[in-house]
Image 1: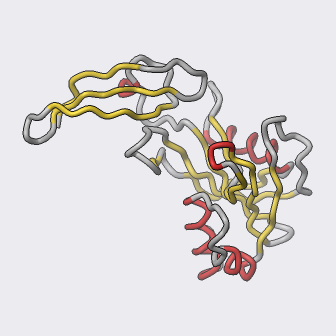
Image 2: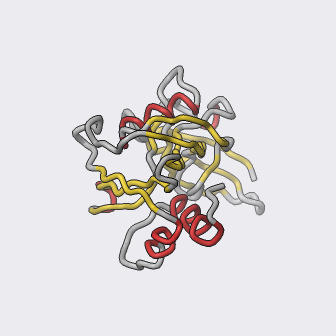
Length: 192
């Protein structure tokens, strides 16, 4: 396999489309279109090891519950259950970005970082976007006071039993990362 050519075909602030030409194992020329968070003319030249975004997996210490959000997602035309998340701003590390996003989306404050992942990919057939998972403990009272006008978020705190019931509802739209953590939390009482 060999990359032959890449061409940026859009120029937007947070997401761009790229056309890539490559040779397959039989030396046949193939074309692919993918989305990227990169503003570079060739996203394959991005510095490795830097995450585009962070997804925060928060456990509320006082309530002893997993914190999730129900958020309106334009692309889905409705509500999705997921974790607080957002782009990593220039100059931020994963912990700084995750702490900021958790507060902005839920009003909760990180009290302890438990674990973070390296950059991981969830849909590499469509995008090169990568995220880091940040597992944290948090405290405070949920609030949507700091949500942006483009965000409609409801904070939900789940016990192990409530998590087990939620994942059985086939009519809900789940973020894949949330569903996996909810399933583990429901079955084993752990988040990582």
